[in-house]
Image (cartoon, rainbow, N blue to C red; front, side):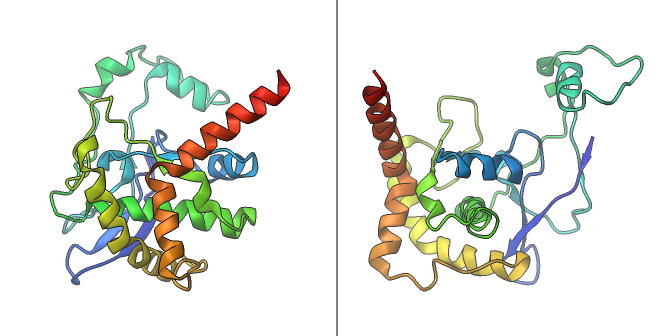
Length: 222
């Protein structure tokens, strides 16, 4: 299956300054984001740079990427398509053959993370009409799995460094994203005190609030 990359923005010099989202099916589509926001759910953003996307290398073809699906996954995602003689390899056996995205080695991983956060915010504002979609976003580190983490946050003890980088890059990512994809720069006009609160929420408080609200609703129904 061939997928097309969506540019997320630009930053840096004229060389190697393009950023794009990972288009693989492991990530949520906009339709998924919309339904989660409409239902008042929460979106957990991974700290795996392969999932977040990567800064394009010089000469990289941005036209698309190949993604290899196991037969069960293909039949799940495309039940209307009948293909004869599909091999029945498991995903585990296919992983060795997959063209996994190679994460950037530069110190721009936090900007890639911010682009994903900004995209969720823009989908929420433009397509759903949510006034504060950042309250539905929280870190979902995936540190319990085998990941390729952000350079500035390779483990849980580095979360303070990630938070500092969000203060540095989040508004830059918003400006670049809007210039590339359109939308509305809603964070740029907010006072620093509110930006601090938004980042605190993304770093974990939103997850706590979501869990607490779930307990209250469950308790009321019992």
